Length: 387
Image (cartoon, rainbow, N blue to C red):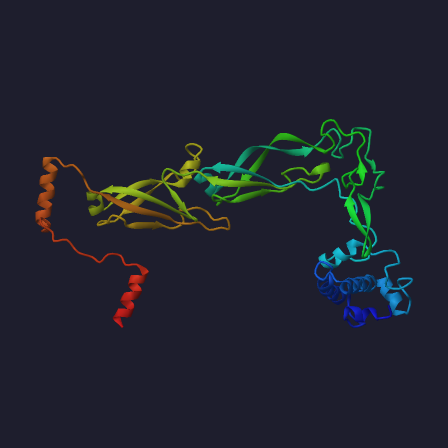
């Protein structure tokens, strides 16, 4: 057929490889026999495919531009044949017309990452700690050194695929000869065979082993934080490099403090009289959980002043007594005061309270009515009503 190849694809003679590929994809979708089974479309599809075979190959394109006949006899596909992988490469980004396939897959590959979970106390999470861990992972086989072959032997090239890792399957179709590459069944795509596998690892190059390692938990971690230990995970097949080990932190509940971000919250109960008159109470610090004995210099407690007239629910914020941050700084400690009202009184206590109520004029208090807490929608409604 004498029609110009560039005209067949609908591109300019100066079109780059990407433009040619896009033009072929568009036409191939329109003319593919699965979409248009009529004979004219099939013939057109073969012509477009043959044109793309030439123009996508730099050497064939250069020869065509110089006036040579790249087919050696026309568009009938009488040349070397059109590989099915060329069509697939055009759709999925390969290099059409390139010699050879993907090649053998490597025996040596990177290992998988591993994950273990570690529970720590709140103080350990706040100030950091070192822990000894027992991990069960794949390690390089010491008998064969990771290559999978028994001592004194070595992998040999596969005779079936001659080391390529792939074998070609050819079949006839309306496109001509379609050649597909499949992994070699004899060597499973590796291109080589281990005639005498290592008895310790059965040719895998790795074995399971339990080992100990030390992990340093930085100060400020929280539940869900993952500490990465590079190359401490699973050794890869063929004795390949190890993946990473991730230690996921879970912080155990504390009997006194509740953590919210880098802040600590706790509640302290004081008697009604102490809240009215004011007092000072002794509170433990979070550092007290890390104390290693007397004289260690760790602050184990501090004095918290309760001002006179403190109401139940009052919050006292102590700056810098919370949890250290991963990137520096330290949160606050928020102490909520709960005022305790005595439930049982003896005769003397009841008499004294009645005298106090009489002095303060609170024998029959009317009670102060306050509006209930309004929702966001209630406040918006009031705002519009006011206008």
